[in-house]
Image 1: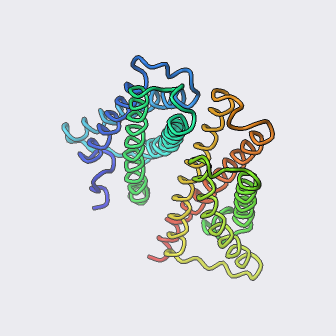
Image 2: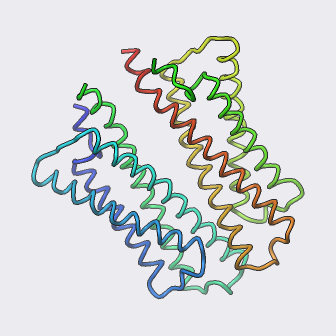
Image 3: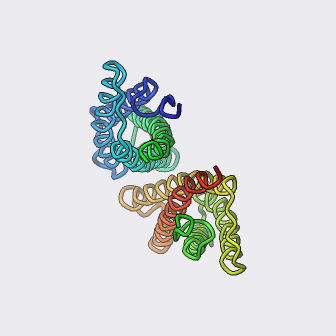
Length: 159
Length: 159
């Protein structure tokens, strides 16, 4: 019964979570990169790097989930789920760090440093990018929690 | 044998971790607060708030661990450990967010915004505060991981 928990690896809820992560990550990357000189600021480079790591990871897992859902073969080995849980947790921490850095630097830029660093349109694009990064972090955390929850039941099944 | 794992609640390693968290949190708070106008910047207020939450939490748990170690009664209920694990994880995320925000705003202040926001001595005090916050986050994460590791063995013992 535990292995049917929605949100854990191989279910359709997990596929939705992964697709959400991918979409928000790509949106965050696009808002940050397109036509904006993001590489001038360390935090923004950090966000771009982390999103560049996250997009292949979530896209791969979304494909695995889609395969699981549509070809109907929910295979779950403990080793595989462990690797996914560890990767999810690490990416979740990095993603939170990047989103917070971006948001706080933006707040400082807008409220303290004045309009010399970003004008209206650029500021709102940066803000959209930070918001998308936060949303993508929330979904990553949800995936990580669901898969972590699945792990003990898998371990006790194999014993 | 699992319940003797070093670092989990009630062991001397856990006491050392908790004391380290308390000391680093207090140091971070003092470096940020004493004689510095931290309330002018949102990220610094966030750091002070989170450290204000963390210090009572880690101090209480350090006292519980000290009681456990010196009075020799390592009592471990699943409910208690669950609450501690959840609290540790939430504080660990908040602490990471605060440390990253402070560090990235500081970096922006020092490299981009010039010396109008902080002069030499203040900048280095802010930097020390951010470094202490990062160290305290590392120790909190270690405690959270050790206690999380302990949880399944407790659950299976009570079954």
